[in-house]
Image 1 (cartoon, chains in turn purple, red):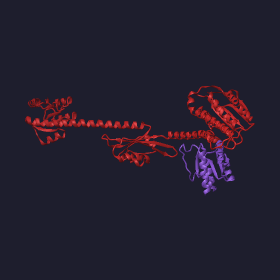
Image 2 (spheres, rainbow over the protein chains, first blue to last red):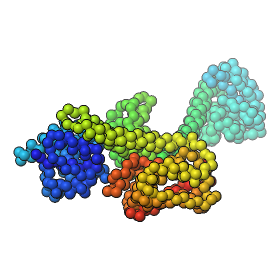
Image 3 (cartoon, helix red, strand yellow):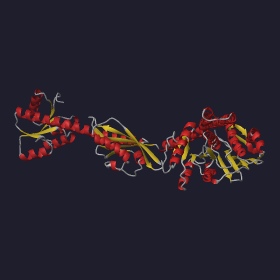
Length: 126
Length: 494
């Protein structure tokens, strides 16, 4: 079964997401800050990364995603977003935001599973 | 004037002719007066303005030419005739040169005289009408000049900028506000101003001019004249119609909206920060609840209870944050509703220490309080001072290490009461210190991860200190603890 890395500084979000993914049989590793997040991705080489956009700084998630891509880590990334869309700071995937999909908080188990499955299937095809 | 009878002065030394002429004229609808010599003629002309005068050229006392000069000098609009039996070409020329209207050779028939006088009277009426029109025009010009000065005074007294262009885009009128807000040094009436104005404004004015007919709508635009919101104006352009309804020009009113734009930006940034801070705990709680309610996701009873407990904690912190936000928004209002009374700062600090007792015991932190005895009195609102020091002291506990200490020192320094609160906590870097008093800013690192807070405590502290015209200093180094020094003015005016 696939391994998923979740990087978010909110322990409640980490635990809730972990439970949802584990209940579908995925293996999960977590980190609660960008530094540890970078480390677990290197150590475990996950099949998918879930990354919160805003941790210590408002754009930590973006920087970490860019860093992965710069270092040729092509693992699919789902980005957790919060209020950015509702306050008009709308963004989509782009060179600046090198991620594959977004999940808006609060997280719905169905939606999370659906997006995770879609990206993992794509990866298998490649 | 035509209905009035023409007044005629007859100056002639020859009695028969004088009286005969008078009678003739009176029977023909004139009002006539006669003078028997030059001196009498001049005297009458000085006391009355006659429409017409018939002056005999040769009189024993004063020459007719002199009488003519005198009458003309007195009333230049009196139409004068020179009558003489000694008709000569030279005297005729001389008398008309001196302003006589015409020349009547003696003897004359009644018809000849009447014809001349009627023509002369018509001339007199024309002269008077021309005079009236000239005066009226002079008055109007004065009025316009006065109106112009008044308009300029009014225009310059308006704090907003205003400028008017005509249909060819030339500057017709402007005030000093227009120069200031458009950031222009010099413009002149008649300048083709459309080439100088910001393109956003020019575009609107051009639209009015191009449409040629008068459209009674106004259009506004915002222009950032200097970058980084240093000068932002709002220009409102309205057409100015002629009395016949065609377009005369366009008036542009310019308002400096820099301050309100800045306030708006701060406000909207604050609102989005608040939205984010409120949504974060809500997202966590909703996430837990969704999992518990979702039949697909298996949750053990222990896990369920754990999630509910954690949800409860998050919601509690949310309530604290909402209360902090309410306090911040009430801060301005409170300033007006303050209850200023003499406070003993050391007593307030002691009660806060009691309030924090459980936390202090948990981490085994010791607190010491030093005061210069007369230093502790201050006039202020008790709730605000209590809140101020509670926020600082609870940080000194939260960010302290186990078995640490807190040292409080109260003293007077100049005009200030200085309260110095030192802890032996984790301290902070220069960068962290710089952001410390911003709303929602929290130092985030490995050491602070387990510490909860709204990020509003010190923002509230800063607002309270500012509202008392006080100041606050922070000295800190990572790992070496922090010292907060609160300076509150001793002589507080309400």
